[in-house]
Length: 267
Length: 187
View 1: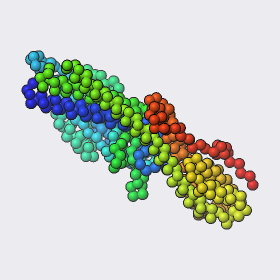
View 2: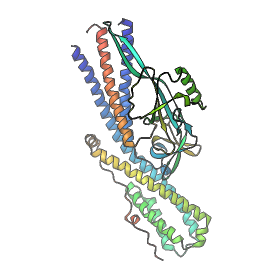
View 3: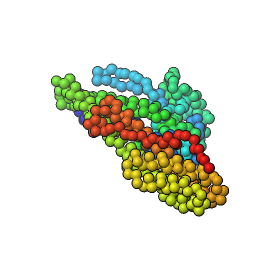
View 4: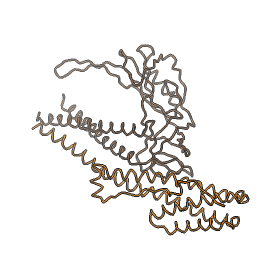
């Protein structure tokens, strides 16, 4: 590897490893905050950081891009099955295949959260949305034309326009068992969304906006989580994120140490 | 040599995680303590609001319920007890007395059709009932905060740090025995 390239890779891995390590601490902090905060009833919640359990009452309803399901939030991802070829320092060629993300997007609108005591408006802007994958569709290669046509259609859709997906020939897959025989060029369309009437876990800042109480991201409070998972499931996923952050952070920093030792000629 | 350096780096990172964990544990205990104080302050705000509403309520019912002096006296006594209360335990006790006294007041008011039709009384009654519901919610929230604090400060490894900080068990905001029973109004 050329020297300048080595410095770039080392710097990139170092920043990435440090970022993952920092993220691990961030997850640890979030885990504790959720664990320490008791649940408020909507009717009597106090201003400031609150945790509530509510049911989504939609005002404006969005449609998800692929399944056309009603929702107040959606996130989509398009993955393509691709072939990669790399050559090592000895000149050996290695070929591998992977699902690569080639497009993604999201859209969100405000909604009411309702519990047995009342309801409150939720402004979801800048919220960390933690929801499981709900729908996956497979599209075999060659059925739909150039990929940029889909991206163009999605761009229109995100701006509120409808698009015709009937010719896309999407086959639904089970989101929990996505295994399928794929060929290069196949695409997967993944949807994550929050439906009306779905139960939510919310941790955000209750604030007074011209006499109306709403939940949003606080100016001085970085935590704003919206999740369709139960508190227990959410804590479990945050714990795994924390372990992954620390584990991968350590791994990358160890790789960086190797690279630095290599640069200074110790290896 | 190289292995030593790698192990040193891994060791330093693990030490950083342990330090972060301990700092987080300390911050968590501090947050739990402040949660209780904040939860109590939020109840206190409502108790004061209820106190203000009661002053108006009593003046609106006085003229109608002149034969129910004992009930009004009880409400006034409960109000005075709340005003004189300084500690959380005293305020909690005063709140329990006030809640049961108010139940009696509203039950007795059923006997006075003119009073029941009075708009001011209806408004105050609704307002006081709303505040009572909010107090009940916040009492539950307070007890959740206390419960989390008590459990955490007795769990390993938190117990060691809690002992260093001299944290002791906090008392729950208990509901009065009278509130658990049905209201029995005698005329």
